[in-house]
Amino acid sequence: MAQRKAALRPWAVAVWLLAWQLGAMALAAVYPHGGLLLASPAASLARLGELAATAAFWRAVGWSACRILGGFLLSCLTAAVFAALASRYAWVRELLLPPVAAVKATPVASFIILALVWLDGSRLPLFIAFLMVFPTVYLNLLEGICQTDRKLLEMARVFRVPLSRRLWGIYLPQVLPYFRSAASLGLGLCWKAGVAAEVIGLPGGSMGERLYTAKIYFQTPDLFAWTAAIVAVSVVFERLFLKLVDAVAGKAAQWKFG
Image (tube, helix red, strand yellow):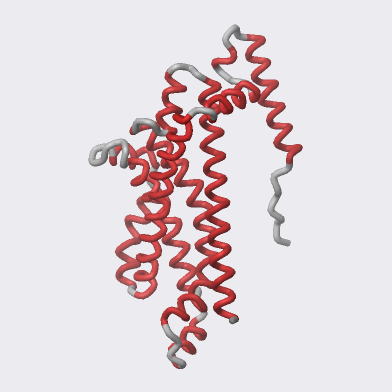
């Protein structure tokens, strides 16, 4: 029997918030400066509200989002091109196998430090987001293309179906579920890798720089507030992008059956 996907329940969130609050209270009772080790949910939320009321906060969010999501979109486009080539030419697939395997196996910190030799901090998040997302999207798209019904493709060739109709009516309905799965995983991965690149590269005005500054000065509420902001932005962009993919899938289905 297939295991059902668990939904995020408010009561479960409340339990973990309560555990967080109790932990912060226990530290505050034992240590005079326990708040430096673990800020309470209330303090973190209050600080997030203060930050969100400033223009600098939204500039940092916009700065990081443009570069990290730019790397994600560039990676998706590049992966689509190479997946199409690899599905047609075996030598392309064999040529890409070693670098894809290396990127999958190598820690992201190694790539960040190595990339700093060639790139400045402002370009680092885009490059790292691109690099970390590429294997996931490439491999999923390649699998989707390879799983396309060969009988439908043969029929399309026999009846001389135009390339545009083949793309919308045959390839897209087959490939989009694979791409959706890869995008859902890749969006979370690109934010983790991109912010890690910002923390190490320290580009000015980024969310990663604010995280690092909060850690250096023991501004624990700021640390939790910026972490919550990163998670929230990541979730919002993931849902918006997946809705766009679902809309394209619906159009492709109408094209196929219309």
